[in-house]
Image 1: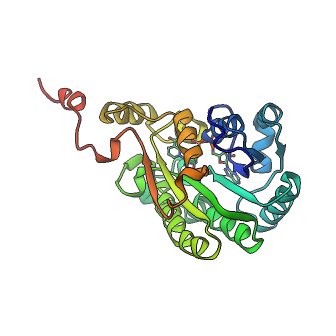
Image 2 (image 1 turned 90 degrees about the vertical axis):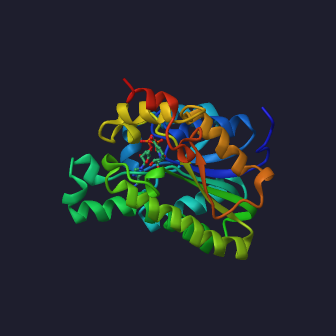
Image 3 (image 1 turned 45 degrees about the vertical axis):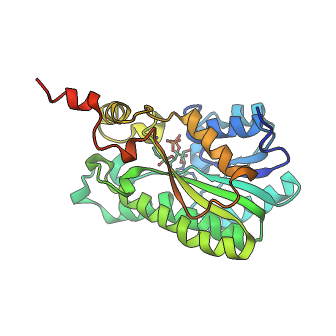
Length: 269
Ligand code: NAI
């Protein structure tokens, strides 16, 4: 432990169960001395074990649907109150595609599903940022991170409309990052993470093949949820104060690998 986040306060969205990237991040932020409010959609919390996490990390839980502006307003106001001051970090760890859930092919989308998916997975990030900004709820040099995936840049057929949602999410980080940097010296980034066995991850068709392929392609192997938590901590810390408006790959080298010997061997008799 490095006490990297001593005295820092924040909000962590998206801890559903112990596999969640947000869950691992909450545990590590706690170890590094940060305090935070945990939040998730009211419906998810009934299923999840978030109370255990709250107890373990001495955190309060404030439910909020990240697509609902009233919920977000209350969340931000109450968090500043509960934590005793403005925030230093926020993690947006939220994603969902109704088309994926309902098994709709990319070429046969139901556009109501599509709209819901981009609202939850991308526009919710803008809503979170806008609510924080309007309430002047972040301290200078604060840091806001959302989680993305490389399907925003390259096609993975079964990732479906989540690919478009991630491209939208990454664009919001750049666009809002400009204004938040100018106005308040707050940084905004996305981390593009390896495939990870979580509830959201396993919702992708053919996930087992997907994750095994990525592992074999990456010189360092896939990055785990715990490693993603570690990387996120560096972005919340004071050691990365001039990093903003970036999409940062955390993928063991996958994104810059054309082919690995291990994958090639599968094609050589
Ligand atoms: P997860 O299923 O544990 O977390 C997704 C969270 O989104 C859940 O806690 C869920 O309740 C929350 N959520 C859904 N709708 C919501 C709403 N309306 N309001 C508030 N919260 C809502 O899965 P995971 O993998 O930890 O996902 C976290 C993030 O990481 C997502 O953005 C995901 O797309 C991203 N990611 C995941 C990868 C993977 O392979 N698992 C790879 C790259 C990025």
